[in-house]
Length: 203
Image 1 (tube, helix red, strand yellow):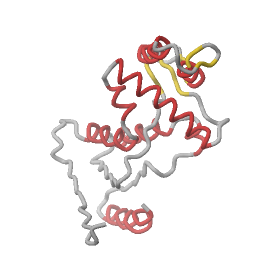
Image 2 (spheres, rainbow, N blue to C red):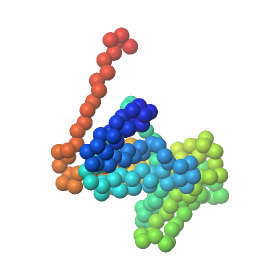
Image 3 (cartoon, one colour):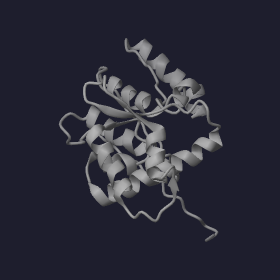
């Protein structure tokens, strides 16, 4: 990433300018303000950038993927019907689990972190901000909520929400990028290159 920013992008910009074109690099892993992250807007910003870029003339999407699958984000917005389905699944499942204020801990966490927004076009529940938590505290909460969602969707339904709760940020961006930039869905302008690493020491 440092090499791209320091050496590759300036050369590309110079080449484009000489030939009457513009060049604007957008790095989905740089430039997200901390405030936006605390407000749970990271994925919204990244996905909206991909959508916006797809309307520019002849955009290109470059994805460099290593050996990490990456962060699986919590959904910022959940349709009311889907949220109620998840909520009711945990409310009505085995009653012997851990309880808080006489409610299953999963139900309490959903109530604590998701709030209904009746002003949106379609009524949704949105993820509250995490300003009051440290990074480690939020990581613990995020893991619990992710487990709550995954357990419910595995048992109750299989649709776009299922894919969203099981896929990393990078995978979601890749799917959106392929669809947004390839209107005919034939992927004839999609190229993939794989590096084969050979370990001569057999370690």
